[in-house]
Image (cartoon, rainbow, N blue to C red; front, side, top):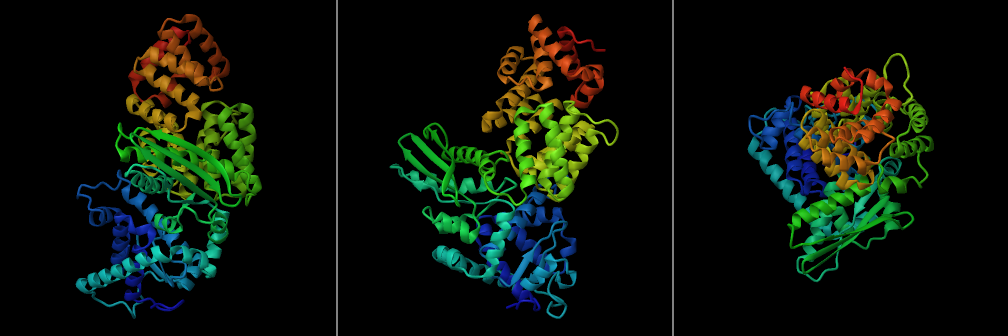
Length: 586
């Protein structure tokens, strides 16, 4: 067994691999297990520097030889999951483990350190880093059969450990006295909110009620794990705690800030799910909702997925229940937190007056905290609003669009797997004219988090503008279903999509439902829709409103729409409606 600060043998690594693979964060994911086993084995064999995405996809994931690493982000996505799972493992179940397995960002080679070496590496001491077994302990040639047997033995030992963990889990969580969890607890409180999904209670009479409760709990953990900005405890840890855990103690000893509790009642033909978010410090319920589904009309798996998606979105969105509850807590950086809160207030009204104030405070925040990925993403959106809506435009260079693109790229550099950062990068790229790369970036973000309503709305709008109005509208409709409070914005996008598909009556109904006159383009879209329906006075009023707000846009009509609309036939169709509405365009 490796000693703290001592040499690491191949046997030490294989034994540690077995412990990690049997842990809560890995035991339910065959892909994560295959990924970690593959990179560890290849590193041990001396091939770590040659591990590439193609090899992982074909040899570890079983993808075919036609796998395209450039256009299929599956390995990058799973690499992010792998790194987060390893971090959670060493935060919780592996808090006392001497040997640390890591796969640092930038490559897929595993590195193995002792706790002492890991701490030194975190402080920048590269001499303490071991990229594999030391030359003295690493054999020149390793027989695959003994290695496989060793892995199987380690896996069996890990399985026994997992079964024991279920029995002693609660005792371990609350009686562990190692200083490592306390340090990790402080880090968790200082960064992303740590959340636990407690097992949903079965209150039903039907024999399927317990299955609903178990399945919903599992699905909700998976859905929450997709959101950046939060951390979620693994399933087995939550199951070991049980539904009636002492929340105050959970916060004090593990750093869990929020808990999701719930119940399922299934009877003949009806499933009722009640979910609530609890602040573990105050014990207060900060959000709750009830969902009713007719089980006879839809498949149980579809019901579980839909309810879990709705709960996860309401709770974990940047402006959702956790964000609103967290505003009441004393933050680590009050100025940065207040600026972020002001941004989310601004995005509701989106006025030029609010924009100036928020842009100024967000610039100060990013200047003071240059590694604040969230601040960079939000600042990029503010620069985009300066560009596309004309809010508080600054003359000279760099232009608003150049500033937006720079902030977005820096945000993605900080966290390449943050769906929010990828969303604003997609928007910036689209406006610069690189539509292909923009949509590719948007699809990457969608693969990371298919329930992010900001992403769904923005990607759906870009997909439509690029020419696929049907799929674009479907994405926006999904955003509207998950986030009905922002229906005004979504209805405006859907109205434009309906106009482009020549469904003018549908478009008119949607634009009237939109009710978003603070957006200049609301008036433009309304004008061309009403003009196509022969509603001349309504079209004239909307045209006048748009020209009053964006006379500069009309003067540069051709350039502006070539930047936005991907297909010439769509631009021609828009020009037709604009002329009918009275716009003086070329």
